[in-house]
Length: 186
Image (cartoon, rainbow, N blue to C red; front, side):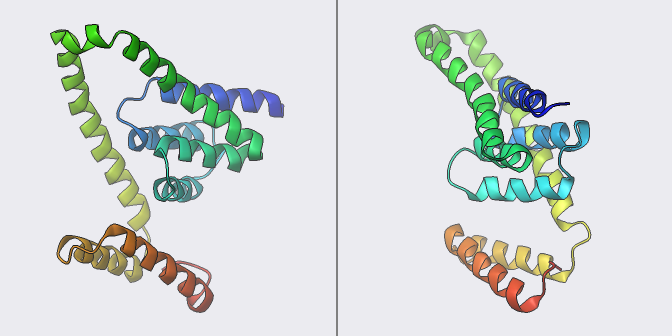
């Protein structure tokens, strides 16, 4: 398969995922893993997990950030651009159509019921993503990852430390650990 054919396949896959995924970026992450790791085999699970972490911690929409990461990993700048276009086009079209027919949508009780049903499905999908990601992060990790998890949780929930400060602290910890603690995570 030529590079242009692979780029087209990347575009079609991101376009399809974006067009038929309801619930936002966290839902699309598991579908991206299913597509690019399991179905196409273009990236491995560990790389996808790393890209997910970067997408979640970067400013902006998670789905777009993840698409940029996957596209860039596969085909550089052109891949990032192609994946981003594939991800952005469906919501742009859908939101444009909905905004044009906003009055009809807002007052229709059947559409409201459909959206309520979709909320329940989206909730289940997000829970599934959290379980899958937690399993992948914790699986095979040492005591350090558990300690970081519990300390972060306690700082945020019980001591109300802003998550930004926790993330910044973990970035500093990660840098120090990388330089002085070794090249691999526990």
